[in-house]
Length: 140
Image (cartoon, rainbow, N blue to C red; front, top):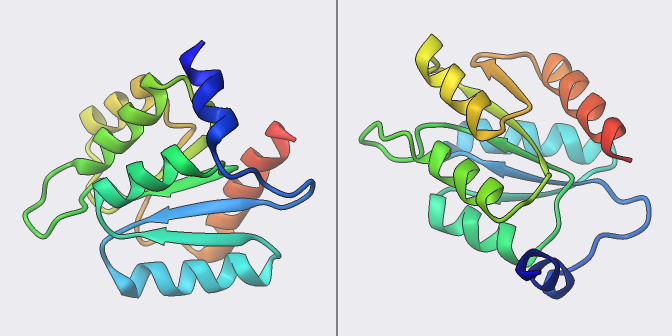
């Protein structure tokens, strides 16, 4: 199966390592979330553009992706493209959509595409961590 081949070529995680990919184009969002999860013992990588996120997801294994919907200054919902690419490749990585621009229709589409949770900005780091750690615990 092609997905097994891709998965075997990706950089593996350590036995108890929790690896998170943060995808957002705003440093003011990326930095505090990354710092918070690193303090919780997670390995955190960041991507600011959809193409960068897709490239990382194809070469590394992650336990969780925290994904903004609008990844360009022009308001496109590029985050859904990243989610769709991940799911089309058969990946079961947990995904949290974290965005200020979530209409009921967009939330429905995100869930249909395989998002595990949809949270609206602003969101407290503690609440985000509770959802994130819960999703990662379900997978372990």
